[in-house]
Image (cartoon, rainbow, N blue to C red; front, side, top):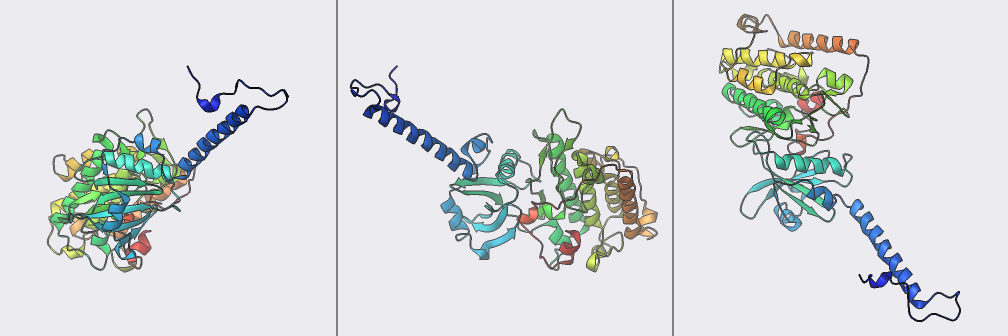
Length: 396
């Protein structure tokens, strides 16, 4: 087999001075240096770029892809006027495609503290997940040092904004109950039905987005952790939002799907309960509902929330069980009854005091303390609350 020309060292003519290096040898050496130098430079360039082609090829993306030019046109060159959020990965823009479709474009920031691998993981996970109660990833764009994700646009922002912001949506009880069931179904899919078996790690009201029909969809898989089949638990870097995290995860870094169940319980409380200014807890049922609620469903939701927030992970139900409880397919043992709720003998303050006591008991029994870190990635990436809101100040 003939060798490549730049690797040929021998030539027919050799100088009489045996110490001299032939012209052919010099050319060969120079060619080798140039070739391998170019390879190194190319490798460094690939590593310097946001995402390597190898990383992306391994993801088996279930999406198509936009061009950077298309996304620039849709967002008017990422005009600040179209900016709808700033998150751990970077900025998010509202975009309008030529066919009239409204999209949300997440643009990775070169200064993102989370790094490229987490972002690539998000692409792979979201693209493989298709469910009515998960925010849909339409396509992705990878050009040069630009990596962007294109999501479906959720017209009614987040559940948190609907519940707590000044421009609150009028959510009647039937809608709230459907939202609660929808979130539960989405989590049941992630935990039990999805091939990936994902633990979300940051379930909260800002990560439940609402479409034009107020149908909830779970967003933000940047913090999701793939469950390993042979592991009974997952030890990982603590990441989530204080106030929603399960005690065993916050204290020990002990992460299972039951951590998501706990977070869901807190969200269920928020859907049914009333908050006053500066986060002061008031009555058990949101007064904005007036008499427009079904007592039986309120009792079910409160009991489900209490089960989900049990300090012992193994006592918490699976999310598929939660769905069955909320839909009335499974009878649930009442921890709170009609008389205790509607005679106002039990208040939200008392209930939360009991939860806090359980947390403190768990903490005192803990031998290992793990640092708490706020979520570095949030669905507030897409639809953040106003920074001057009482909810934002007290929750985050």
